[in-house]
Length: 311
Image (tube, rainbow, N blue to C red; front, side, top):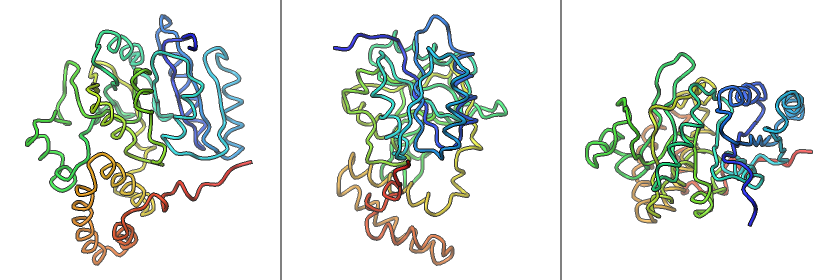
């Protein structure tokens, strides 16, 4: 058994955004308690060589004992990139951190202290603020027929789920936290196999927290810990390219079929065939999405299949 060397492995993925990654690393170094032993593991997910070299140069000027950079020649997506980083982690906890985030009030130490004091917790995440200091929705509910057809408010009312719009003062158990900051007990994360690398983008956090819940391990939202997430750098769902919308639905249906079963998947797909068939009459750009749903949204047509191996 490998000897434990540090308390937290902080895994950050870079993909053609070295400036954000560098600022994120600097933020972690500046706003994380010195009482905590940690290692920042940066995975470059097959960025253009120019961006990778900029990142490599920036990291060389930082604390070399705390930061390590690894390059993947293949863009494996969110889950795959993070799993690439896990193999270099030797810690009690894993933090999967988006590169477009900044630490505010030492959220990493907050999460560490909470997890140490909470035996049934497998994962947790803090309160998100946007770049203007406004609080953002920081957790969500698992996807199923009710949520996708009737909406999240319906699920909250019918199943007595926590209200995503409410301001909480104390930690609460929820379905899953936002993927931009996910803090796991390594033992629990490892026990369920980590992120499902069949998924290229979206729904990875929902999937793993669902698998943890099936093993009676809980995920918590911590309102007292905060961090900034540059929401403007993430894709706006209302202005998403149709290819990204297709990828979103591909991941959603994959996770639903995997975790909810074939009948659940087929019933929801039938509703979406009707929904997007009608939508595409008014908005022709949705016709490609309609056709993909019609054939079952196969993973073989995911954006993952179009990635190439870089030199």
